[in-house]
Image (spheres, protein in one colour):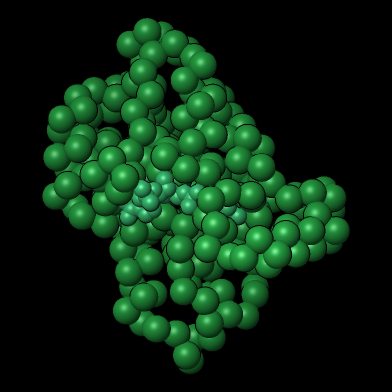
Length: 223
Ligand SMILES: NC(=O)c1ccc[n+]([C@@H]2O[C@H](COP(=O)([O-])OP(=O)(O)OC[C@H]3O[C@@H](n4cnc5c(N)ncnc54)[C@H](OP(=O)(O)O)[C@@H]3O)[C@@H](O)[C@H]2O)c1
């Protein structure tokens, strides 16, 4: 799609990781890029705050959602249900509320691009919260692509990507995880935020893409 001086792109989660890479790429184009997260006062689990945010923003063209990276791990039988529901409130319900509010003020030709993750379609014991909320988001995005047409709605599904999401791990554990991914993935590397950012640009730029899930995961799903 053509970017002009009046194009407004909004990256929710743009303060870190993949979202920051998308915001940087979009900021090299004409127009304005708004970034938001809890650090800027926008908690996407708070429906009223999200509604007020878009009312204040006015007309927009593109919404990119990368917010929310944490979810409790563990077996279904052992999971902390409150933590699991809180993760859903952010990543799944937060994404849905963002889309609902953004669509009200989106100009013709607009796009919404969500973020899921490769675990949506990979069966790994102990990860069901990520699997369930990302699968739910991918399924709902396809419904939204019908309901909100001709706005285009897509999902980017990243594989393991080196971002601040893993800053809570020790340096050694993090290096081991990324080294193992590079050694075992068909692509022979782990992801960098810039690799994933290209998926959002593709979804925005290609006018024939809607209801799509764009896998950028180094081959994790064929491994
Ligand atoms: N990195 C990976 O390996 C990987 C793999 C598969 C899928 N993904 C998905 O890719 C997306 C981006 O991940 P990332 O690695 O870039 O994570 P990240 O570096 O931790 O960035 C997450 C962003 O979300 C924001 N955020 C978190 N909770 C929020 C909330 N309640 N309201 C508003 N903003 C919130 C954070 O900012 P604040 O803390 O300021 O709110 C931050 O800007 C996530 O959906 C993640 O599940 C990542």
